[in-house]
Image (tube, rainbow, N blue to C red; front, side, top):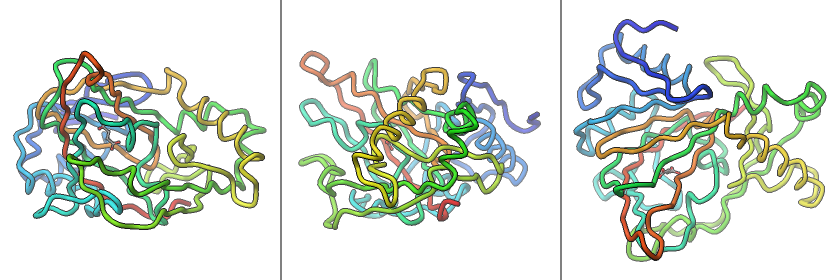
Length: 278
Ligand code: SIN
């Protein structure tokens, strides 16, 4: 794809691109917005460095991709309920984003994406790794693709308390949630098929037991996480990412607040609403 209004520099062969020539704190012209969306559809996750944003500007930028939605279990900022502050501090348990996942797969209509803005970055580490789930699907055998065609995955949230951290990230009361979604979904814009399972949320297949489902779910997750299907983003302060949550997995790498490395990492995430997967 060629771009006339933005600069697009791929980060890895599988997915990810850094975008230059755009100030995301200002309203995007229709031409720039169109190319940014094209870049997202081509690269699945896009990054912009050195962006000065307040909460209103972050919210407005995220709205280019769809309607911001609140997180069901993590309390948003008082004035910006759709913006959650993800704080990682020394000594806290590794939960919430510690497994590869597509955000909120347990909703009937999981998000189409999210925008993550770096406020406080450790001097090293704390990268985010992303996975291309088109590639994960396309590299399966035709036999397995056919077998997966009719399967629904049951995606469970686990305990709502896992989405908050005492003293740092406030939670919301709620009951665990679950949703059944096709294991192979079709992107509404590109028309391409992708795998829609994740180690974070997919527990079993509909109408099957955990024991029957587990070996195939484990195989699919292990296959999806092959390094050649991933990219890894090294954050800098005021960098911002947008990912297409329908066709990618991600997780943060918590390698900066162990016994020795007592650093903090603070990000703002705006979650962007999506449709029921088909
Ligand atoms: C997330 O899982 O939404 C956050 C990822 C990160 O903090 O890098």
